[in-house]
Image (cartoon, rainbow, N blue to C red):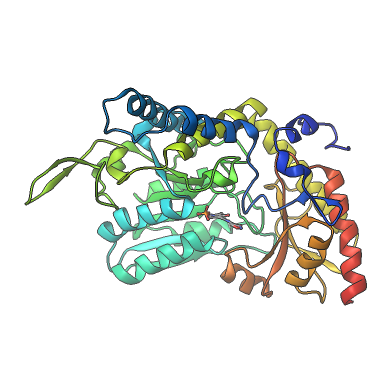
Length: 415
Ligand code: 7TS
């Protein structure tokens, strides 16, 4: 099997960790190119979770018995592991486990935004945001009387930084920006945006759903105040995500969810809150998933995040090169040669993305078709939908060739 040239990852070895990749549909071996939606889970992560259920399962923070103590330690340590994974030196106090990126976004928007924003304040975001961020800030702005402003995306799929400097002012309360666009693949200059935000005493929230799985992330080097990600896109389980927040900020913020596990003292009249991060984790948390997420961080670090980033870019460049062979294909995002995340969205002239993805599915090629939860961006691109191929550690250039070959079948059917 051909791998990227020169071979950056031991893809064949990695593929052995993912038995699902051996599945066949209609006699064709699965080509899984929908990783930006959900990545596959290696045996190491599945084993960590099944070992937990077989040997340790108990509620955390509550029991004094052996199992509860073991479960508590493993769950709490998982917070330290994820803090380390994204470069948060404050450890568990700066790492809240949530359901996913969307949940992390809502936590900040409700806890910080609803309390801190008001008429005259502005939230500056971008035209390429995922709905999880765009809709959330839009609705919080409506409720608080704040205004929402969008940094322009230029024809190359890059943020217009002059426009960013114009929009971010002393009225800005929050800058919310996606690190790697799930539709364009653009890598945004989040460090530069953090600096501009801080020059105006604004905070910055970074949506790391596509970056944490695919490149080294250091929240302190970026200067992020908040940074969100999802477990299921980084070889981890569903049902868990993370929110990094600077400790001083998290300490000042009110809880978003109330209930058991997040309190210090409760009377009939009032309550006080547990220490970080538990103040933000009400109810029985996703314990097995937290342990699985820590195993996913170990798995990715064993491969090496720098190498994963190079592999992702290599596959994206190869896909662009192959797709650019055809003049009936329109490709979105930064042009060939510009480093990008491991995904490519495109349209085949006069074939709807949904029809195209159905034909690809006949060849067991799994891609995403639709607006990828970026409807306003698709409106701006002048299309209702696109087809997106997105890559991970186990994908190969051969698989991209299979997809490109399958496009011919769609042409024959529809054009
Ligand atoms: N932000 C970005 C940039 C994303 O790509 C996604 C998910 C989210 C936020 C939300 O993540 P969740 O785990 O809370 O759902 N993106 C996609 C996608 O591109 N296709 O399916 C989900």
